[in-house]
Image (cartoon, rainbow, N blue to C red; front, side, top):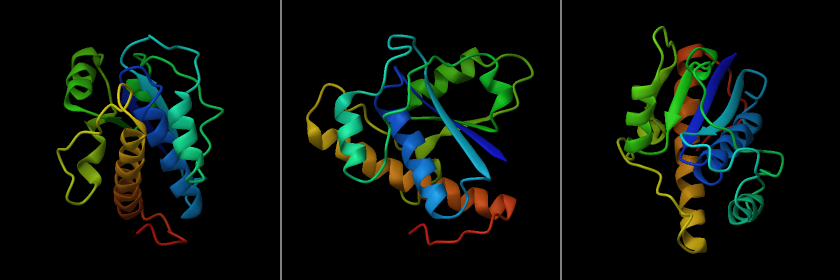
Length: 165
C-alpha cells in the first residue's frame, strides 16, 4: 500500500479537498485498496474541526464527501508513516523540509508537480475568497490527483480499472 499525506496551513480547505478527491478518484480507478490518504496542516489552528463548510459543499456537488474528515497538525511520525507528503504551496513545502526529523523517509514535494502542465504551481488558498476559489481548488485537486495516481500506478504497476483522464 502507498500512503499519501496532503498538507496545507490549517487542514480545513485545500488539503482535505485533495485527500477527498484523491480517495474518490482512487476508488473509481479500482485503486482504493492499494493507496491510503490523509491530510494535515502545518499549523494547529483548527485541530478537531471539520473542513470549512464551503469546502464541504463544493466537494459534495462533485460527488466527494468530506464530512467525516477532521483537521489535524502534521506530526514527526508522519515523515516515516507516509511514503509521500504533498504540500499545497511552496511555503508549506519549505516548512515541511524544516521540520522533517532525522531519518525521515517520506518524499516531500508540491502536490501539483504530478499534474501535466501544472508542475511547480501552487493550489491557492480559497479561505478569504468567494465560491469560485473553492471550485478552482477542486479543479486543481482533480488534476493533481489524476497525475499522482497515474505516476503511482506506473511506479507500482497498479492496475487501473477506469481512465483517470
